[in-house]
Image 1 (cartoon, helix red, strand yellow):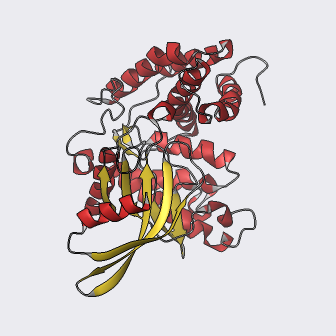
Image 2 (spheres, rainbow, N blue to C red):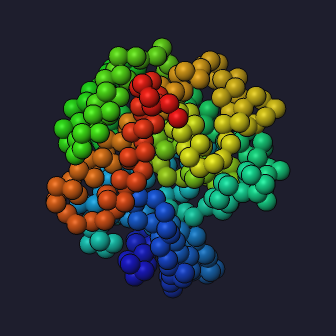
Length: 350
């Protein structure tokens, strides 16, 4: 793949010469894409340059959990980079032909900053930065949620990026069509009787809709692992592949969930503003309530539960021999208990 990176860069920068790749290595973690880090050295205009790079590559099709497009992701992060002050990597382009990298891939700038968010909490070395970092993180999210959708997504590619029938002509259409997607997906993921909790969840979400808010571009995986920071500022929001037009409270609900699972305390900060939700409400005027966060905690988790459990079901049915879906059972099973608690099942209290 190193030679494929060289060839990719030669097409991207035809004026460059002497391109070589150093330090090519896979980055562990995550389950949706295969990610590699490297540094490119090249000469342009008589001077030597270094480019810190990330290669994001699709997994084998039979092992793919999320069906997303590198072309759509490229267009999105470049639009955000050029039209907002939300900190993102530059995307150098994408390759949809599987021949060079084995599957579709994209190459983006590797941003500077610390991605080990736990350093901000629990006595970590950067605990003195936590309020400043989280304050900026909230401001970044607010800018994303309040920027006109057409500015970021002029082609409408993010209205239904998975191609599952989502309708975004209104808030009610969005919630109803998303719940219908969840419900219609149930037969493809019901590999065990315990998963009946999910169909109850999907029906509950459709039945108990909260008040409407303006639709926005949501990150879709807003969690403690998906931002970098340095000197009290967020240097990059990363991993945009699950982004879509949706309800802005989805990002708040998912962060609340992952904040708990990650043993971080992002939602408690900035303390001088009364916490993340209070500051978010101050900046937006949305007056989001904890009850609404609970709804979108379940709504956003369902968004991940459908593809994850469908992948597990395909593996158990013998459609392929990839191990990743089997590994995902360890996160899927405990989630069922959490759903039963949130829906107030008798005897399901923690």
